[in-house]
Image 1 (cartoon, rainbow, N blue to C red):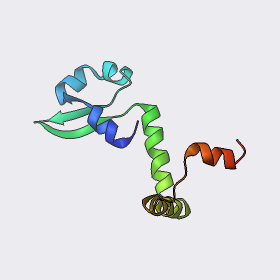
Image 2: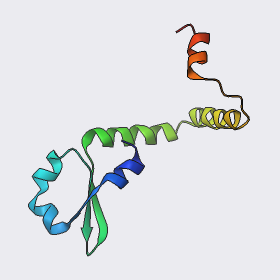
Image 3: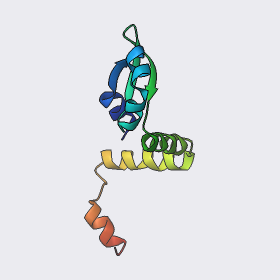
Amino acid sequence: MGSTNLLRNAKPVNVREAQAQLSKLIRSKSPSMVLSHGKPVSFLVPYEDMLDLVESLDELKDKKLLGEIARGRTEYAQGKAISAERLLKRMGL
């Protein structure tokens, strides 16, 4: 799940409820935003989602990858994109 979806799909829960239902929240496999006086203070994220987030952060450190992404976006905006089918065919896959 992407970071935006994590935030959007997070179940809001107040601190007292989080304390009382911590085991249930952990087992739920969905994110929870812990609130204190209506303001976010903590976030519970399923392990697999956290691994995805860490991987995304690592990718953001890769300057070569970021350059390729920027180049691809520029080419796409210029209409130089090709369909995935054509690309796979070119690659012989």
